[in-house]
Length: 433
Image (cartoon, rainbow, N blue to C red; front, side, top):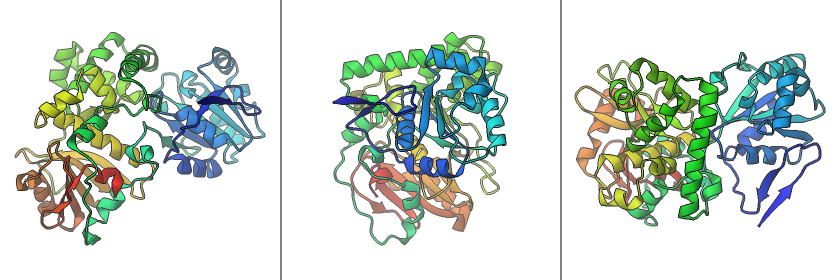
């Protein structure tokens, strides 16, 4: 059952459903509202930014305005300073602020004259630093809360933190198995979109929704924001990335296949990143890994959307479980879960990948500010062999004490130690432990 909640001083209406799932980033967003003049919630369209905004202001004096509404957008364009100053007695919450980039300068001017915390709460479906016409980043005046699709922990209504668990692995005497999941279960998760609206949608509805979603974001949001010369090339580029999810991005080859000049390709990739459709996993290297290859991997942020665009079905992934295609999708799923958890994790960490010119590689390298490292290999198979630890063993031996733990995540049920600071763990370790 769906109802409508309308607050006093609210000029836009957002549906509030009885099956609303709490978001794990809500506590951080509420804390930011209490100590920072501007709180910015950023993320792709339809990941729940507007709903989170409504939840945050529900019990506070606030005026909520959506710039997707033409009247409000025109008012903001005509008089940005007056627009920013319209509700000084509470929170002015502005949805989809990227529609009027000049508002950022107006918010800066307003905050510079009154630096009270909690003055503005804004959402954006684009990276505010990449907006055409934006001349202000709000540096020193704003904090940004990234929001992505629902994590597996949020779906189970728990706050998961794999990084904190992994950094503590050497201190754990026993690690339980996860018998409640099959390989098919994991592949279903991998190919299921994480957009809240699609949680209970039928396959047919989901397919139509994803088609419309990709078309709108590519034809309207991405093209408007980036100003690239040939926006019709964005769809083929996104489809190609989907089919090679989490593969290394070799610019010369990609440019040929999608008919984009190689020198222009970074601009097109930036356009997709600016609306949070794709994520880049940089190559990791430092003075103990000086033969590392710096080529980045690129993945579609939502593996369910990637599966739809690449016309990949769970049955096909299961039949070819040892293929590069299946491995790339499962790895992309793991990257997505770790990226979501970065917002609320007790650990601050970066995500990269490692490969050297001898062919030794580690799918994911998590590194904290103390330069300690947790290595993660991802396998779509249910069994793990000693050879699967080759890259992790190399990193452990090169890094010494900086190497905290190496984990091979797999689609089986057992948790098994594999020697000095090495473990094989079920994929469910990402949200169950």
